[in-house]
Image (cartoon, rainbow, N blue to C red):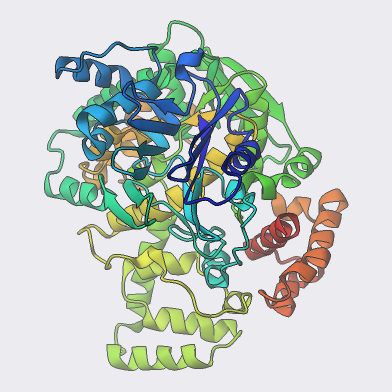
Length: 627
């Protein structure tokens, strides 16, 4: 796990600029740093290293191919690098190896197989930049699901890229303005969806793609090497035909294989254990394939509604892991909240970022790598909102089934024209024009009427949430899962886990995002995932081979904190008041202050808390820290 940065077409002090970018990412790679300059073609590559595999200098970056044609900077882990090395040797690669790092293997693979074929062979999480000096081309690439971040764009005539958007901001020529067009999307989701960023002309590289940049002209071409939509479509066309028990056998086999690969490390390794299905399954498999006790970590809260630490402790005791837990409260939350703007680089407002940062900080005191159970909800139908959406649509059709569609849409459209901040008209517009399950699902988390007035810019960029038509997959719930896997998972969940871990130089790995697990999951019939009111059926089938059912059968809590209670008084209340007061000065030209203030008044005067208040606080704190 590391941080990468680079410039193409830079002017002035290339060495000084790339070193500034490197220093800004030191938390991503505290063990070493290096850079490469091609002053003739104005190409600079930078790297910060968190040493995980092959701790010697043989794994240092930037790394050059033996013939000096290629230079690579790379962030992440390729778990099948040993198999890839054997395959290369079998296919005729005869060069001597200098060390045992995955970096060297993929560099040699790029030279041997080419970019696209190598990317298709790689299994892991990564963001990388490969400079082909012979072709005068830099290739950027990102892993299939977007576990590792990669920002890129133009800064004062120079093409720049980095793992951390704040590193791009370090460049002397950086004067990119806030892209106010993304704010309506931010206020709807709490994050800025790819490919956009908070800045004009700066973008996120789409997962599963690579981008070629000509070093002379800065011309760019983007290509895809893996497409989740196509994976889902093929899974639907060629479903798994075995029984649910056979599906569980296959899932267990795949998880054992990927967990073994992800437990490869030359530094201490452990796992997050929240007490839920996903993390319990990952830890169960880890312990099953390990000869030593796995180290597990969880945090707890005093509020019973949010605390799963006791459940995690019972699971750890049954599996006989070496378990560490830490109970936290408002004081610890205040400590990490002050770091959020620096940690995430751009506005990000999933409040579960707080417990994720806290458990990452505690875990890093004991290990350098931690496995996580994220992605089970998107792959195995774990979110309750899918069923809520179905129920909402069913109720809607029953209520309005006698009203002709043309009249219903006309009335709904009229409500939309005059809704303003009127919540009743806003809801009437949504319900009367709603036709699909996708629209019903979206409405569950849709902004209130006044939220659309938070941004002074009302014209949104294209909303990636509906980049493909409703009904792309035959099963409506599968379509919702695909939408979340394409957008919510990489732009929220994976951002949260990566940035939180990297803030404390902790590498996080996610076995459920293994390529083979993902592709298998999309072949499973829906009733293997959800049936008779039970979610993640096949995951549970595997888990109950290791953990008694009675330890797991309880309502889903999620990983959250009592934020609405903590903000009521004390230090967090004063922090929020200060951000809203000082942030107003920074944000007055981009957000409607009166609308923003209405959320605070609702909370303080009426006791009504909206998650949009947290969105406002995170944006304003980011503006205060980033200007």
